[in-house]
Length: 233
Ligand SMILES: CC(C)(COP(=O)(O)OP(=O)(O)OC[C@H]1O[C@@H](n2cnc3c(N)ncnc32)[C@H](O)[C@@H]1OP(=O)(O)O)[C@@H](O)C(=O)NCCC(=O)NCCS
Image 1 (spheres, rainbow, N blue to C red):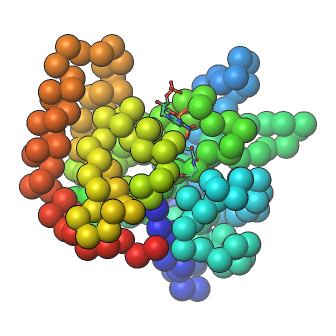
Image 2: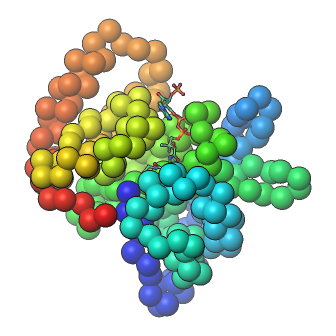
Image 3: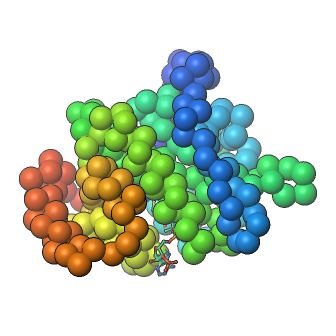
């Protein structure tokens, strides 16, 4: 739910070295009939396209994605969204071509925690493109990348009134727990490998809900599940 910490000038220089650009994450799918969408890791030159996406979002969607931010975002803030190291900080964008130019319709990113075991992720989809399965697609791509990077747990702090995100989290099999000290925050979390397994087994299993309940019970052993601290908003 948080915006990544904005980088210093020195870190920018390092971020622009995109020799590690993970081309294996590029994927193409058709949505809305015949509209071809490309999911790809973000590039530094995407900052203006990201700004356009953020500006096109409805007020509600924007405040849910950037609850702490002062908008419009500054050039430095936009650059920090577009300049990632593809390791600790990964961002994926979903692009469509319209009238001969590229436009972004979604963004998904994670930041790996210092322990390397868990990562916090964030998502946004252009309001006009929601309910097409784009967030589900991006979330799967993120979880594949996180798993490959050795991340065991994916988590997201969601505002309790963010029905679409909570519905998505439940739909994707995340365990959702209301924060013990702040009822306005819901912690959504899952094992990255469980997300991948669910994605590759699309048909409902007879004991799926029981397994999910067991996973929620086991999640109490995860480091962030024990925390009852309030997320900064
Ligand atoms: C939350 C969000 C990312 C979902 O994106 P999306 O592309 O519409 O999600 P999907 O199409 O993949 O939805 C998958 C499932 O999630 C559930 N879902 C998603 N949006 C829903 C909504 N508005 N109402 C009810 N269920 C919803 C449904 O079960 C849906 O499956 P279905 O369409 O077959 O019924 C999008 O609404 C968004 O960008 N919101 C603003 C930003 C935000 O809140 N980000 C989260 C904090 S970082």
